[in-house]
Image (cartoon, rainbow, N blue to C red; front, side, top):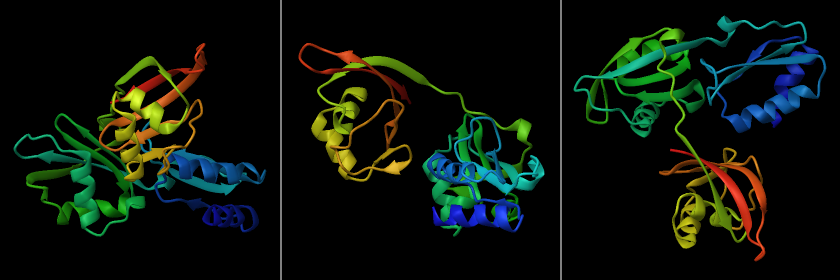
Length: 242
């Protein structure tokens, strides 16, 4: 929040233009909320492609216009020499192992022929020089254009569950068909986020619209509460992204 206030102050009072690091959706929401309080400030977003999760924001005085070049975004593709699929966690681990900051990188997009990465333009040459493999998989690295990105498709399933309460452990247990005890253990093990914020308390109450991320299981969104049964259990519509 403090950093957001500083960016807005610089844009409003000093008429400066600021391009942020890559931010997750929760961070973006905070910055955009702060910007909306000042009528003399505008903010634009770019994550490299439509519906990107991690994005950069361009903050400036009210006369600022959208300029895609200002975001300084590049695109690269890792191509495994042996054709093996590259996993997100392995690619991210390799990049962080070089000492790179996560906020210099946008989305990491594994696909059938390799892995595309949205990143700060200044990292492109460094990564090309220093990465020859991901884990035990040798890779070739090529720069690609925005229109060449292999955009991920969303695999979503919607269904309705009945839960005794809107506690996060109860909803996760129903959504992923596991015991409530296991759900609680995963939450306490720091493997759960709600709206990109770490949640460690199994008693946390979910609301419609909340997005739950459970490491190793994917994501789950609470679509709506459809009603309450005679036994006072909640009928909840969920969407699970696998």
